[in-house]
Length: 439
Image (cartoon, rainbow, N blue to C red; front, side, top):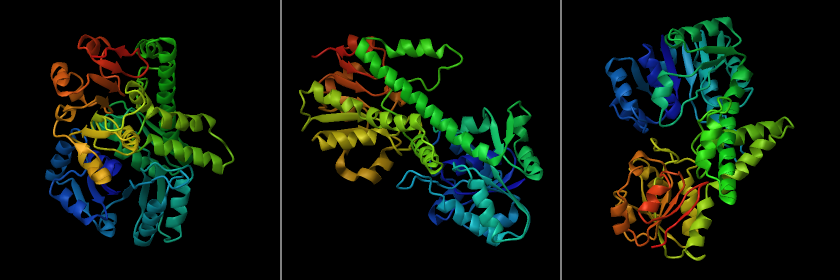
């Protein structure tokens, strides 16, 4: 089948590459000429493990194409996926201006039947709005479908090729049949496709992400309580996770959630509720707790240094909001950097993948180390902000030689408590006892 993807951001590029891998001819459209030219030359504009290999394979197999010309791609395709940004507005609501503008363009350009697929995360009722906009521009038959994505950054290729389910919101039997054909390679292997109405499909995405944000935040609350009463959150997590009604995923405590989805989607669902005179009290609390949780270790750093960290050098391992991505949107590292700098500390950070994105944002406000151990040179303390695999088994002996103080504040609970203890480090993590070595 011939398919057009409008928007080559994270969702659009992964979706387009996946659909090409399933044997379709896919035309990816973006207004950024430089970006499109780079993709034509095999340059993947985002970091995602294993994406480049699949991307290049489908370019070489002439199933994946890139253009700035929407009309050209539209004329070649029966199905048009909208994978456009829906950033939060000032009031937290999703900004649909990109989606509405492209809907206008499609309506003006259509010459035959199309299925318009909303792949972006959008509020309930967006399919109706897109339908109205297109219908105002043309009399040609078309259908609008909701097909939310459930990709995890860092595991997007794995998730795209082995989804737990495919959710499709459609009221047209013709559109349902076309979507079933696109996803037949998945359903042939037992992956379910769940058909529902468009509004239910749109809400499914928001509800899923918001539930996971609540789950993470609840575990962070439990972790903070563990520290008050002397319990160990790792043991509590294992005990809870063994209950199959709860499950083990998203129970790892840390310095809050971030990224492009959870913060934005929680805000948007709260705002959508307010518009319907409904208050999502649990989501409002989740937001408040997460804001505090992201910088919870800064007060611990201050406490360790007697209330004053002015002039102290803090090494930071990790800048991305999570491992295996270069995404720094809503990253906890940025909140901590801002607060530490405000209190007069100096930052030497290392992240081999996300560094360039932080440089664009912060410039020379912090020092960017060439390696993880270089960041530790004369550091008063180490702050671990991202759970990159390379940080899991460091050389503690070398760390001790590099650092001014053997002090670690771990926002991702990277190490068993006995490891820093045996190596003579002061070690403060989340929801576990503090290792009080002070050497």
